[in-house]
Amino acid sequence: MTAPVLACRGVRKVFGPSVVLDGLDLDVAEHEVVALIGASGSGKSTLLRCVNLLEELDDGTIHLDGEHITDPRVNPDLVRRRIGIVFQSYNLFPHLTVLDNITLAPVRVHKRSRADARAQALALLERIGLAAKADAYPDRLSGGQQQRVAIVRALVNAPRLLLLDEVTSALDPELVGEVLELIRDLKGEGMTMILATHEMSFARSVADRVCFLDGGRIVEQGPPAQIFDAPAEPRTRQFLRRLSSPP
Amino acid sequence: MARRDGGRSRVVVSSPTWAPTPPVKAGPGPSAVQRDRIAWRRRQTIRSVLIAAASTLVLGVALVFAVTGAPGWDRVRQSFFDPSIALDALPAVLDGLWLNVRLLVFCALGSLALGLLIALLRTLRGPVFFPVRALAVSYTYTFRGLPLIIVLYVMTLGVPGLRLQGMPSVLVLGGAALVLTYSGYIAEVFRAGIESVHPSQVAAARSLGLTYRQAMRHVVLPQAVRRVAPPLLNDTVALQKDVGLVSLAGPIDAVRAAQIATAEHFNYTPYIVAGVLFVLLAIPLIAVTDWVTLRAARRQAGR
Image (cartoon, rainbow over all chains, first blue to last red; front, side, top):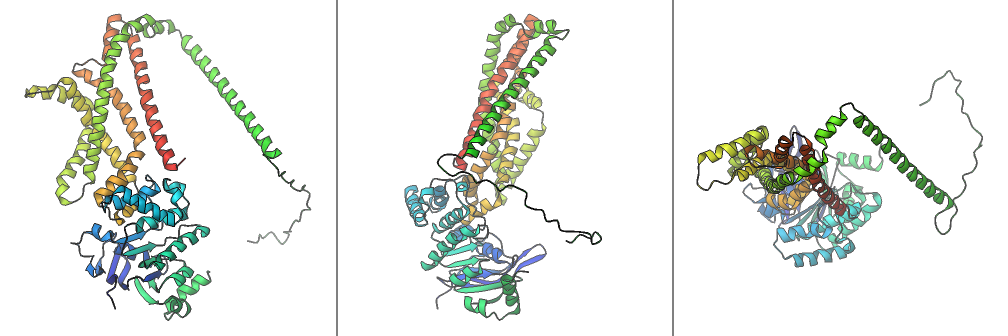
């Protein structure tokens, strides 16, 4: 078996008095899609932010391709270039056009030529059917379109690992589909992904493995069919039961 | 919730007495309802314009009567609104105004640049830059606290007293005093703009691999500068009036020229001339910035 792309060991994160991540372990293999499920505040988003070094750990280690990235001597900018993250609220840059949003990092970080970056960005936009919006500013786009642009912006760096933080939570139900379709395409291309999600049916259909988080730990994990149809842990059963029949 | 009223509550079933809602005619062009709506709105617009014109006229006439009907009006008109004296003083006041304009351009560009630099120095991170940050903070505290006139006196009277080689003219020193004071305010305006950009924008930029400095330069600053354009204009208009204070050190600006003309004629009309010229000078400045702000907003909205 090859070494995992990502290896988290005993990851701990504390905000004031509340322990958000409490010694969490997680391995993600190449081309694997892992879905993180759990109640709000169970630590899904915090884990993704820790992996992208947007938060500092309070204990434990994270390795990316065997390299210890939570070593304080590691330059976080170099690590982030290898990890893409997409946020719940898109976070596109409002003062830049769609095309400039996508080419900012390739031009400034990877020092590629503007023409080269534009060509690649246009090709990606073409693929998601938004080439006509290349010169529009983000607020002229629907939520679903903005989120797809945000995904493309993260992809243009050719990341080893893509983190998706509840990317459909801020979208109208009819716009969720186009974003999920794009994520499904990425899985088909072999992208390694971790997605924090509340879309259980999507997690079931796209994920190779589902992890149920509670109290800052992974309580139970396994193939979707096992987690959703035959959960072993009482807390998992309780969580899923509450989802299927809201009070 | 059920209401308790002694068991006498009763459900009232009203009979359908209303007429059925008529359908809106479908066909080419707007329906009759919509045409009626457009005509009504047009009548309302004409009515508002007429009312506004009438009320403005009434107020204007009342003001004119109140001022010209005042017992001292003839005396005031002679000493403040004398056309011949206005014409006489105009060349000297315009000469002075040219000094104001040149100083304004120099000082506005100087204090914008210095203010932005100081605001950026405050955002520098890392222990090496601690003294730079401390200096930038104390700069804004000092020059916002210090009265402009004192800075002017120190720069135009004190500094030449050092008798250094290559001492610039009093005008340049006075301009430097204005730049020192105004850049303190402008730095704080820029800093407020920088802090108003949501942290999620920095997170998004950093997650793409941009360094802190690149995120500042390409993501935070462009948004910050756009947001603070109106308050910056405000400071520029205030500066436009304060540049005249260099006349305290000798150079003759528009207000000082008006003062001299006033003393010559024993008449205050030159002050009114200078005042009108200052307002005329401010109008294009305000219009240009309004236009720039509007264009940026429109472009961002894609309309």
